[in-house]
Length: 140
Image (cartoon, rainbow, N blue to C red):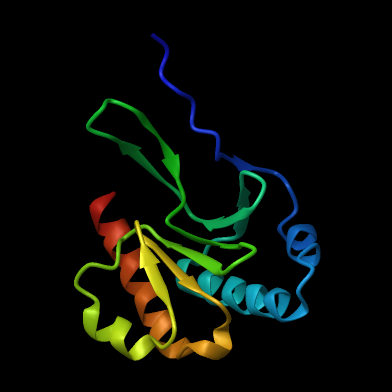
């Protein structure tokens, strides 16, 4: 049986056009700010992953099932309900930072926030930096 192909892949779609297409003006501004922050942290150019995720950097993984592929080091997506941040290094061990972050939800390596106004941006940057550092150490 053939392995299922990962649907979310890096592509050449325009990150700028995608962000300009975000209808909510505040969400669009938040996206630009997150974009700038993640670019600063990773020193990587943003790329579209699938049709709605903006990712930075990449690493090659091999799962227990034998499935392997490439995935972003860090990324985000302006979903309808929340801004979803993909912190691939995980959020375990960051309880103290998460307490200081402000209004958020977490689930499966994702951090969900309504808007940057609800959180402490310095704390978000610390979480993102820790995530990227961990992923780079794991994938040397």
